[in-house]
Structure formats: C-alpha cells, structure tokens
Amino acid sequence: MDKSAREEVLSALLQLVPLGMVTTYGSLARLLGTSPRAVGRMLGRNRWPIVVPCHRVVRSSGDLGGYTISGREGREFKLKLLRLEGVGMRGGRVRRESFVRLDELLLGPRGPGSRSSSSVR
Image (cartoon, rainbow, N blue to C red; front, side, top):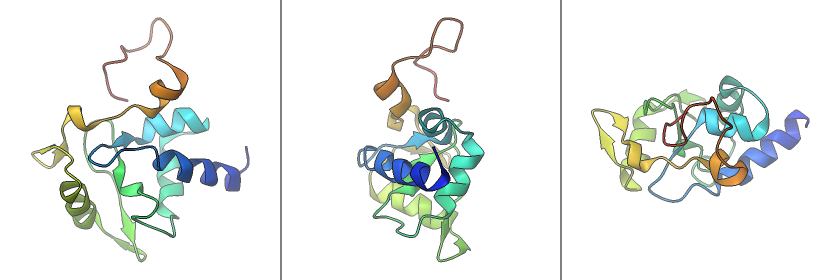
C-alpha cells in the first residue's frame, strides 16, 4: 500500500472511533501494516483536524502523544477536545475504559503467545 492509500485508509479508520473513545497508534499501525511512529507522522499531516478525528489517537500508556494544529504543538487543545467528547481521564492520561481496539475488532485478537486482548497496545 503506498503512502497516499495508507493515509486514506487511516482517515476512514479514524471515523470508526466512537465519540468519547480513543484508539492507539499501535492499533492503527497493525491495521495499516506500519509502525506506530509512521502513524503519528501521518496524523501530523492531517489537513482536517476534528473532521478527521486524529485527536482520538493516544499512546498505549494512555498518554496523549502529540497533536499539531495549524502547524503548532497543540497537546492542551487535544486534551480539551477529548474532555469535551467525554473521554475518561485520570492524572492527564486516558482511562483504560475509554480505549477501543480497532485492530482486534476488525482483525480479531492476536495469536497465542501475544499479550492478552484485554491489554492495550
């Protein structure tokens, strides 16, 4: 899949993240066959923030990760958007019950020997 196609698929996948929920860079990376960092770079090029809800993607630890709006760092804006949408937060991190694993919903859980499907990656 070329870069342009990946970005189109990523935009479509972000539409599947329900209001009040988040997914992880790793979950999206598994679906796209790339790395979490590559997902972050693609999200940083999003020309339609909020419409394409890249603010709903966080690190597996619950940390917000990055956010760029109008070419500037916008982590505080990302935090405000997530709170406005009803994402559960504790100590500046997203609570586990606010995570949705798109990769497991669409591809099924990972095979034997991997972490359990209840862990967030």
